[in-house]
Amino acid sequence: MIESWRWFGPDDPVTLPDIRQAGATGIVTALHGVPADTPWQREDVAARQQMIRDAGLDWVVVESIPVHESIKTGTPGWEAMADVWAESLRAVAAQGISTICYNFMPVLDWTRTALDHRLADGAECLRYDAVDAAVFDIFLLERDGARADHLDAIVAEAETRYATMDAATRQRLVDTIIAGLPGAEESWTIDSFRDRIAAYAEIDAARLRGNLLAFLDRVLPVAEELGVKLAIHPDDPPFALFGLPRVVSTAEDLAAIFDHLPSPSNGLTFCAGSLGARGDNDLPAMFERFRDRIHFLHLRSTEREADGVSFHEAAHLGGDAGLVEIVRRALELETDSGRQIPMRPDHGHMIGWDLSRGMRAGYPYIGRLRGLAELRGAAAAFAAMARG
Image (cartoon, rainbow, N blue to C red; front, side):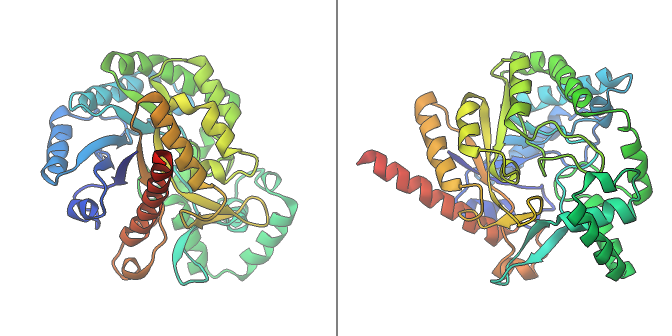
């Protein structure tokens, strides 16, 4: 596997020299700040690539070129935004970058209710709390029909919790959910978020899936022409929330995407943490079913909680994802296919030095360094066993 690291550009508190010292050789990044309606310029991609090369590293994956909301809603004129997206593909391919991770989550990117959940050992991690999500949805967003979308026991607990929250705690929850997490495309106010989800009032999962397939019908020929691999990222969390459908959450969702367009350029980012947040997702089976489509690996783990909906980020070798087995299968895939697959450790815990250094939530240095070292050790052990 190509050991890689997500880097958010020159303003990232984790520097390129830091990353090289961690032992990674690949960089996963994007031209953050370029709006979704604006094509990336080749000279800008080239300048960022040169910066990375000057540090002794290589830009191996773009994560991500944002998909404009009009494409997701199928608004008249969406085709022009898809063509903008394809122009960004051309700018990336011109610099020899051939793997593009993207997602098709409506309005929100990855979503959590807490960025600093304290674990027993004092580390901090990201958490999705189903009760807090219900508090936001029912009492703060005040979405019509919200109660029916949450389990009765969750709603009852949310009523009690909301009654005890002060104004600052409520605002913090709002900000955490909609103010824009690292890597997210946009941030919202509560009012603008209400307006945005209203655009999905008539869009169910079937229609959203149709819009995704129409987008791929338009951009995949460009990817094929350029020799670029598209790697869709699963929904995070992998279920509908706040009235918004999601269509990249299960094996059946992935099969619909790949069966519609069997091109090798139509591929997958296998994110073990996202897929593992659903108890009905069998990760080893999914890996084997879609192994030929896997172009990029997000190696992180989540631990599902007692209510079956809540989860938090686990240590890389803990939780429910079973990353040791995923590493084993990834190495087998590389041997069988002759490919090297970029991987990156993801959503590390805030530990030690990270806790006082202003690290981005989910993207600390020491926490990801620990994860990379653990994954590297697992890969080395399998390689040694294979040699006998």
